[in-house]
Length: 168
Image (cartoon, rainbow, N blue to C red; front, side, top):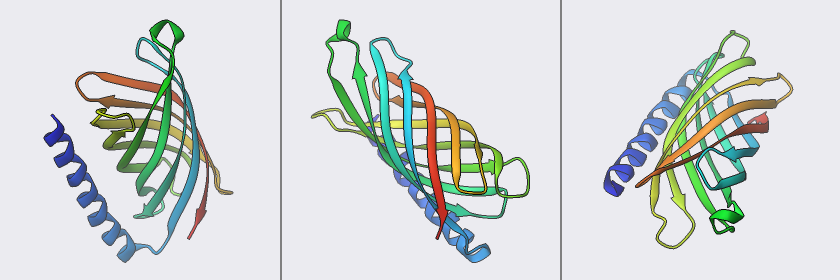
């Protein structure tokens, strides 16, 4: 399982690099976003999830972008399940599609990648994260998302991402 996850993460990085090269040739517009993630664990025993991320977005055209995201999420355990918390560092790449041709407004997003556990022996997980959101022309971005991690079992959270993006 761990070898497959590493192969997938490497493949996703290569695909993102390929798309970024094509995106730079087609459009010089790139965006950097900083986001806050807040949600609730969808797996028994998990409580509040809070984290942050940085997203570099390669714009293929006004409707399609290739985001590459890295961040940190802290999962709290409910007291009845031992309390405490643990962290995961997700690194993802995907596709973001705006439903109109202005480059802002409603969008759908799908990302895949790897999640690196911060506790000793936590290992690497396969990460998948679908979202729907709305991006305003002033840089504000609000999305409803799910983020799942799969590594000898599955955990995840449903939440929101509030972010601010700016052009580079």
